[in-house]
Image (cartoon, rainbow, N blue to C red; front, side, top):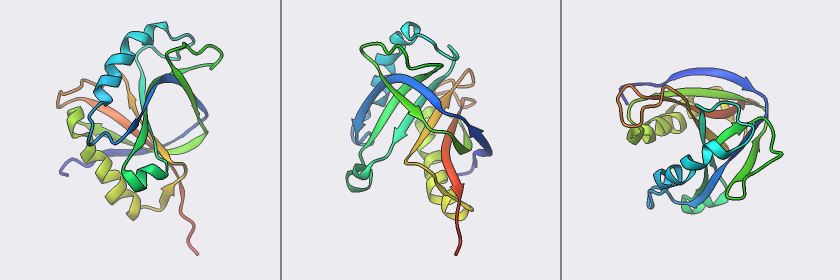
Length: 164
């Protein structure tokens, strides 16, 4: 990878999300774009949104990920409260965490290169380890889908490695 993603660390409080979820192996079944298409018309109907121009793509990893390369993917918006959840949506609260935040620059189709860098190169060689079995993509006004100057952030919950 010639373009190493920019890295910063951010401490965040709980994040409340409302969106739609799927489960599977998305390398074999590229249905994530279809989920975004299905969810997008519902965004305007979600109450208590924190910001109309921000979306999240949350990957949650279970034992099925290691065994069958299957994981949960949720497209969502941040909300201030989970008091009202539309019937077609699901909700999730991400716990407070320290995040390693990587900025992916380039077309969305090349995002797997950034994930490969994070998990195969940066994480094993850093002083950090995974703090929880998820990560998320953060989309805002910098995101331009397939444009080469498009940007989005990938948040990885981390904690300091304990060396004995």
